[in-house]
Length: 253
Image 1 (cartoon, rainbow, N blue to C red):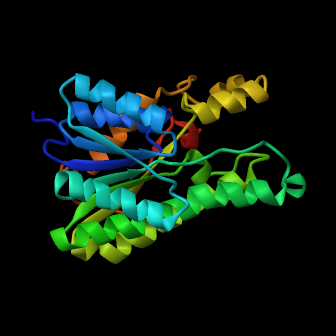
Image 2 (image 1 turned 90 degrees about the vertical axis):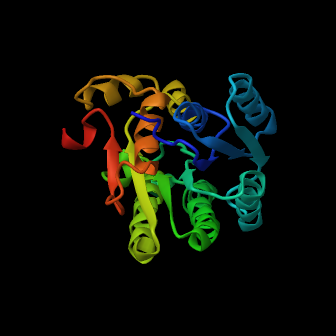
């Protein structure tokens, strides 16, 4: 069987670490030319250097998804570099402190919503605009199990990830007839900078997460990336507007 993403040009945001960097590696192995975007140039350059050393097509652009002009520039860079944009993984996101809702500072709420919601909004607008003239494409937004259920003391994060689900479904409905599929993944506990930080600042939290996950473990970023690669591929042409839990069974528990 051929690679999932052979000859596709795929943009990945939040690609300097965690799920985004894992996605760059997985998509490359599946045959894609990847364009990585994030704010940390040194890390982007390291991942791209690694991929190129392995004979893969990869490039990067520094940008902040909360800034519409940056999102536009990153998409334009992908199109200019490789001639088109076939697919995108809107992965950039932040976590936040675990604080009761009535004690949550405004600045924490604002920062989380800005990256997790406005960032996806900005990227969707410019990615869709680039895909429409070509007659289609595929986009996956990174939500969370927190976009499907409630998690205590994380109200802004939960709200932001529910909003990602809403944006996914709205875009999928609006552009289905133009050949653009828009889906989302809802990862469970995954070993990334955000979760490692949460576990470090909240001793015992990882054990709690394992106790409510039927598989009883933390996912590796590559496991999430593999699901995204399938959603972006041509293997599921009738799938749009879906939110795929990749969570070890958490939402069924």
